[in-house]
Length: 373
Image (cartoon, rainbow, N blue to C red; front, side, top):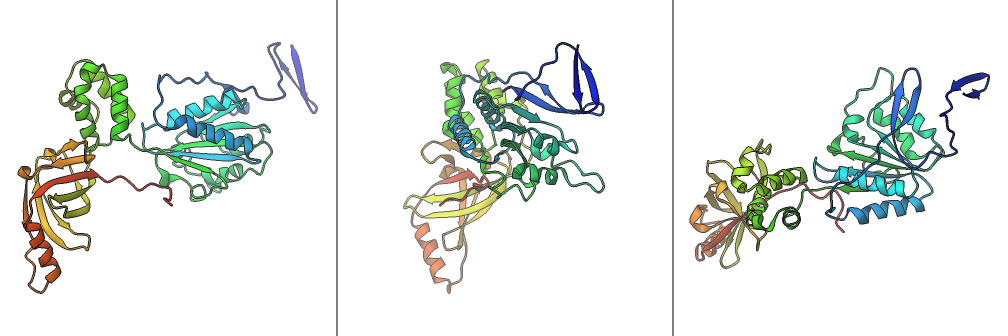
């Protein structure tokens, strides 16, 4: 039997009771019950099953831990991006490295009023991870007279309490984060944005996972990825089907990878003499059977040529890193401008004197959230 006193109150525990000056470096889940209040529950050790980690995960993790060691205050890290593109893997890798460096890891997967004060009460350097923060804290309504869950955490992230902490949040929908979290490097110093794998990354992944006898299907997967957003979950499923001997076209028809909406593309007509006509943003379904007609313009903004084509005829081309449609698969007609439009008339005449080379179609992804300087 062990008796523990807190003021005038004595509590009886079994002989298994242990006391620690510091939390051991392992994984804990933050829990709450009405009888006990907040407490930490030891979780299973984290492990990464992937034999190879793609991208710059390891270097970024080392960067975070090096900065945390140098900081004299809290360090925050935001991991944002769509599902299945590496956020959780990065978070797990960072957590494993943090534990290896001697920091306990607290996982917060549920919002409970007062949780910020509880975490503040832990006067020890540790890592605190909020998985899917936009759901756990962004989709929860505050009770009457109470601050919103995200607002409650602001003072915690500010680091006004004892015990320097490494805060890591993952989120799918960046717009659901509190305005005082984004663009606030005082609270969250780093923001790592995860994007869909590039053609080179897809090729590397497929070659690593597939027997060489099935490498002939990789080109079809890369082409498909430029029409549809493929994350690593999708690629893993595709690899499984291809490794069972199915051609890609047959495999993808039964997978849970479906076309739910139109997407935004840039469409460029390139002539053999180097002239180009462009539409920067055009919404279309690359798998529709219907033809589309798109007016294209030059760099000065003149709409001068219209192309009509079947989007599903586009094929991936390694040289231009995009899907192309060859001249025998599209039609062209030119704008009938007035005689007064001298510049536009010259442009049309120059285009008509040469032959079209191809139409280049590229998916338009969102702009990089960081500034390019």
